[in-house]
Length: 325
Image (cartoon, rainbow, N blue to C red; front, side, top):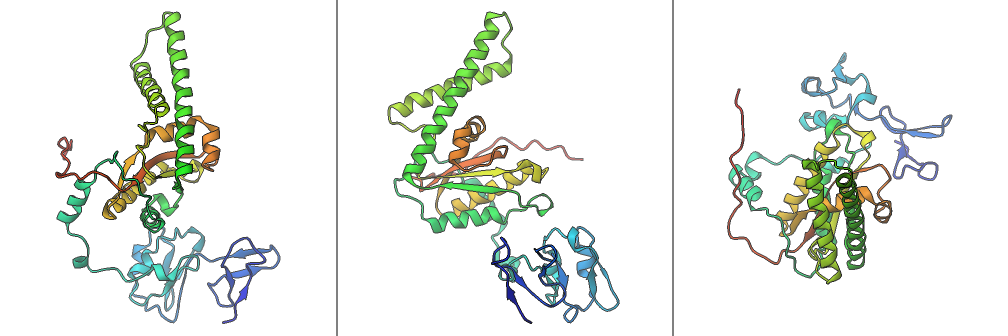
């Protein structure tokens, strides 16, 4: 097979031209690199039919001698067909072949008791040691988020990692400034309602509660006490263009939990920080400093660092409220 490096002709890096069917090719008329999402190697396929029944989009059907892809454009790159194929016949040119490594046996996976212990061991950390978190560990946490499932396998989530002392301090100050500004706006709104004899709603009282908390954060900050990030050495922020998916919040929740549990497994502590998300939503300057596009949702953020405390007992929760049918 002859390959031509076309990285100089296109913005898509590491894409090559192939002469065989199903490979990447270069459209000279349009000047675009076109990549077929999935193709099946006819020399390997034994037409066992497993991929046909498994495909969520139903884009694989039985051909004369092999399975064939009827509509590659509709493939969502879930990789189910490749994962079950005993001959490894399906190919995904845009995905890394190395990541389709053999699945571990059930015996090699954590047992249910171990997994539940991990779930219940994780607690919000607000006391951190001073040392920074190594980048290689942060990368493992990002990988845990990357491999989280998402609606339609759209993988819409993007992340920002703040990991230098100067950057953390800058974001801390900008966040508190944005929260104080929002607090002042809430107080003005409630005061105006009171002046006009409008009753204060339960939602207003909740807003007022947060307004007071944000003012307190600023007082502590001016005293050199960090009640926002608790001196955590790193921050992780997730953002997503809501136009690219209808399941942004669900996708983010799954990703966040996988990342936080990976941090726990690495001996690191985390604490979700909704106040930072609120501030990003209110401050264009903070959003710009974090290089988060205007209009993107910020569904979660968390602090990250080595905990300077040891918990001796697992968490306790209220009983699950379940209605069985």
